[in-house]
Length: 438
Image (cartoon, rainbow, N blue to C red; front, side, top):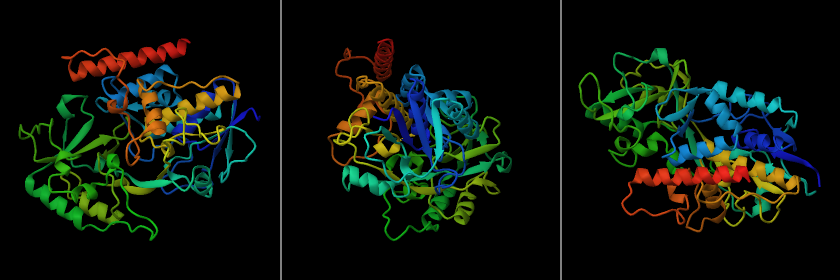
């Protein structure tokens, strides 16, 4: 068997997999099609590009997303190291300066003597028993999607993901917006655009009437619930946005001393605070329509857009029954998958699958038994959801405590939700530490 691991895709999952394998002394060929082939969502030549938000979500262990980060820090995750080194203020969330973040990862990969970067579009995997990790992400292109169908059967699915616009901080009308974090958590990391009822209704009506980008005739619009375009939310009912990204709860307008009818939040894109993104404003509107309609948001009348919102096709496979809990293909155990293509959703969730695949691919090369993370850890829960989900329609999943196995935990009848989450977190981190020790 070829003792080199081949990884397709230098996104978050691919880079994490490469790093985990290389640190175990295994040689890695990392195939990346950029810069010769750029997808509609990519703009940078560097690795691990964040194509949507710059937020990696919550970072406290009482939140499943935060606990996942703590688990991965214990396992020396490259992506978490990069995120911590490029963090920008974001209240209780972990957000990053996307340029510093991607450069950190790129430098780490290119300077690793065990990793060889090959700029090439991979269409097929040779049938020679060599170990491969397919980490091409939601924008898998070329002939590879068709090849994947031959591996797993004609079961590839897709949905549409959307990126929110980014505006120049200097173009925001600071006489209208105010600085505050929801429930006072944070250090003034968000700007808030207040709306009264009339402004909200007029804005919603404009969203409903705005022109959207037309899809190809062969494409159907299938949205992932966790990344719904703002215009799709608006179409679901008059108050849907007010219970979603425009909720005013926990925000007190210092000019009025009360909560507004609705509120659009802007979050820092970089530490310098020169760029802000519109939180929850993923969109499929045409660019001129974005400028017109979003200009109705108080404080953004003259906003200068550094990036308009875009939508792109996301591809993932029906992983249950096809992948095992190490993200290895059951019918061809020399092939692993990693990233959103496995049916996990989110930056760090995708990274965790790369970490698991990278560790196990390296162990396969070294003749060692695979390591399976138990479902009572968030890393393991995501892997088991992808491999063992037995419900109805399989959909991408973010980290959450609902998928974590708590059967073996001590049950305290009167403990609060926060106490239960802390118990889950402590149990999980103890298990991860025990695995590291062993």
